[in-house]
Length: 358
Ligand code: NAI
Ligand code: MG
Image (cartoon, rainbow, N blue to C red; front, side, top):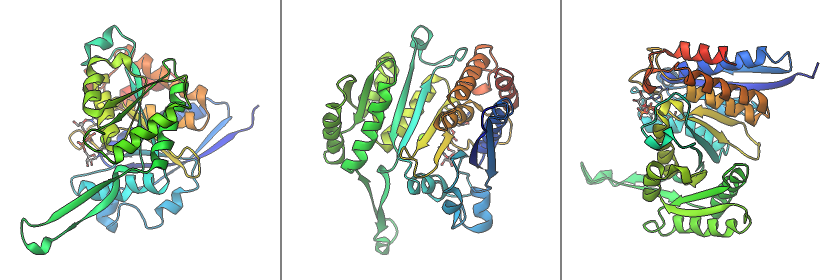
C-alpha cells in the first residue's frame, strides 16, 4: 500500500449558508478520504469564528487566530457576514484579515457551465463555454488605505478618502500567474482588464506591466479590455474568453457576473492562493452568507464542493479533484438541482447525489 499522505485542514464555516455549504463540502471530502484505501488522511479542525463569535467576544476571530491557522495545509472557508455586524467589520475582521496576512495574492475563480443547468446566456446551449477569472487579491481597490476625517465640521460635513494601491511587484506577480495559467489551457489566451482611460495612474501601471510581461509569453494570445467593455463581452462574446486577469474590485464584480451567467452565484468556486506556499491558501465559494435563505437547507452546495475540489488540486490530489468535478457534472446532468438553478432538491439531496456519483 502507498504511504498515507496527511493534510491538516482548518474549517471556518462562519455565517449563514457558509455553515451549510462547508458541511456539504466536508461530507464529500470524507468520502474521498474513506475511498482512498488509506492513502489520504484529512485532519480537520473547525473554528467557530464569525458574527456569533463577534457577539460574544467583540472580535471576529481571536487575537492569535492567524498564528493558529499558520501551520495548516489549507483553509476551507464558508462565508462571512450577518445583519448583526456591519459588513465592513465582519469582512475585514475575518476573511480579508486572513487573505491579507497570509499574502493570498491570487484569487482564482473558474466560470463553469454545468450540464442540465439553464444559463440565462442563450449561447451556452450551443457553445462550449468555460473561463477563469484571476483576481489580484492583495492590493488595488481593497488595499484598505484611506481614512475619514472632518466630522468636527458637524453633521453632513465629514469626508472620506479611499485610495487604490497598485505596485509594479503586485501587478507583475498576478499577471505572470495568469499567463502561466493561460499556458495550461486549450485556448492559450489572456485578457487583461483595467479602466486605464479614467484611472490614469494605477491602471496605466498595470497596462504597462502587462505589455512588458507579455513579451515573455509569445505563445499566449493577449488582449487589453476596459472593464465596462469586458462586462458586455462576458454576455455577448464569452466564447472569446479563456483567462481574464483584473484588479481586486473589477475581478470581484466580473466573477459574480460570470457565475450568474453560468446559472447562479451558488455554483461558483474559488481559491485564494499564496502561490509561494509560505502560508496556507484558502478555498471558499464565491457567494456570501445569503441571509435570505440561510438555515432553510435549500442553498446550493456546488460552489463550496467545487472549492473543495480546488483545494485537493492545490494539495496535488488531482485524480480526486477530477472525481469531484465529474460527480458534480453527473448530478446536474441528471436534473438534481437546488431551486436557485431551477430545481426542487434541497442541499442534502444534491450533496448526497454528488457523493453517490463519486
Ligand atoms: P450573497 O452572495 O450572500 O447573496 C446574493 C444572492 O445570491 C442572494 O439572493 C442569495 O440567496 C443567493 N445565493 C448566495 N449563495 C447561494 C447559494 N449557495 N445557493 C443559492 N443561492 C445563493 O451576497 P449578499 O446578499 O450581497 O451578502 C450577504 C452577506 O454575505 C453580507 O454580509 C456580505 O458582506 C457577505 N459576503 C461575504 C462574502 C464572503 O465571505 N466571501 C462574499 C460576499 C458577500
Ligand atoms: Mg464578491
